Length: 465
Figure 1 (cartoon, rainbow, N blue to C red):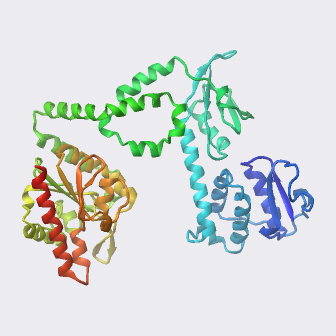
Figure 2: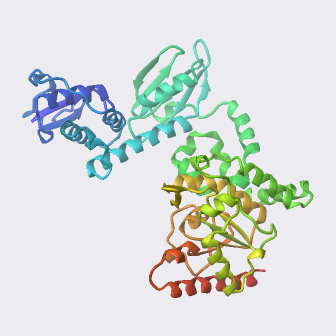
Figure 3: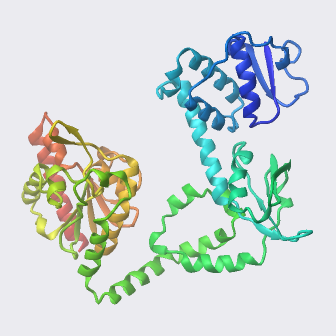
């Protein structure tokens, strides 16, 4: 058994050198134990050899794909004690099959990719949530921050702060290691405790006043905020002391903002809608704008009580610039008529405003939007909904439902009953008309069920208004 000792938890250079020597010596992964520092009473200490006991490399030097190096640099910073062994196992595999590092279906690669993603996420959180507080310094003001990372990412994250705050003298204290910048170089010291960091400074009161003044209740999404900024970081950030009070008053402030906006445009919603639509025509929020002919915005009366949200424009909609005019739109019109709903009284739009497709010869075949494209285009749907504020909205298909609810849902679990969307409106979910074009079995039964859904929605609308 070979015992490999690394200097510190994120010692990538040490791991790389040891792994290279082990691989050249043809040492199997199961014959290697890894540890950080000199651990007393180590289980393998008596039977294992240290790194310098390995024979000198006899084989030729080797190289590995850059993808493996990038993956290893991130994974080394993870807190999983098995990371060193897992990476060495993959290294041996890569030496035999260099492309194996790209096999996302492989359980080992998938596990390491998840670990790397967690590390990158933790680095992002450190970059975003560190808050410096001014303290008295011997020669100049010094700024100190406290942070508690989940992984061993402090050294990897520190150069960002040296670049961004190059003219400041600062320290970031963490439980594992502390880093310091004197304007010229980064240094380290042992870890600290929360009590070693200052609680506040006079600048914070000015910052909190500014934060409260720019807080926009109309854009408030508590779930998304907590997801991006977990509550464990709130105590380190001065503005979070205001969040509870600001959330509590958000609805009242939003109503005031909407009323004031309507007064400012003289009650003319057409002006506001035209402005939003014109802005959407130049949208570049996701790559779909590069291939689509144009942005396909919603249409219908702006005082509509009923809004239908589909997935995305199709080939004919993309060319004409209008939603629901192709084969699925024609079937939709027929079903609305059978259900007793006047389409001209409803507002119809899509969750994604550009046509996503694959070319097959001269044909453009519909391709389902991904989560990033749905999220990017949600901005425009929210503008439409904020202007119309319909009492009832219908999500046609899973993509529309994901956009309205902010998460992946299934049609079968949501269909046939009212739900509350993220903005508080009542929302129903049913299939997209294109589903009825694709289905092979029980076409008439599926169409009848779709019409029944629409008829129930029409009856519900009468109850609401």
